[in-house]
Image (cartoon, rainbow, N blue to C red; front, top):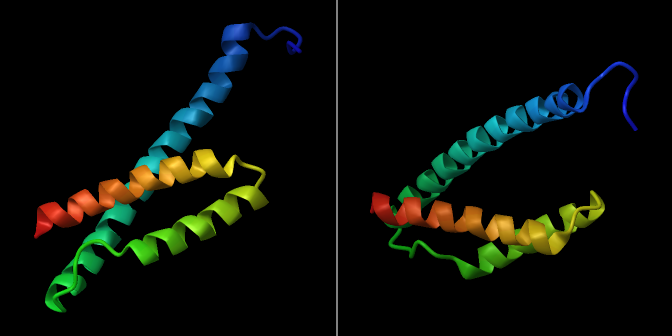
Length: 97
């Protein structure tokens, strides 16, 4: 439903600005997650552990799927995004070795 006196462009632009801001926050969170993964990678290297810990990954995926469900988000879609984030972090850890 169109707000009185507000054009489509004005109305949709409001929401696009919100989306743009959220995209910026997502990128900042990704930077923080990669930084944390790099720290974990340093600890793993000092202790002679492999970069990949599949059991940990699956536990994280399970918890995030449950969070997605509780927020009424598609858990499969959220899992897909999370697995891409995990891959991003693993690639950063591998590159740092």
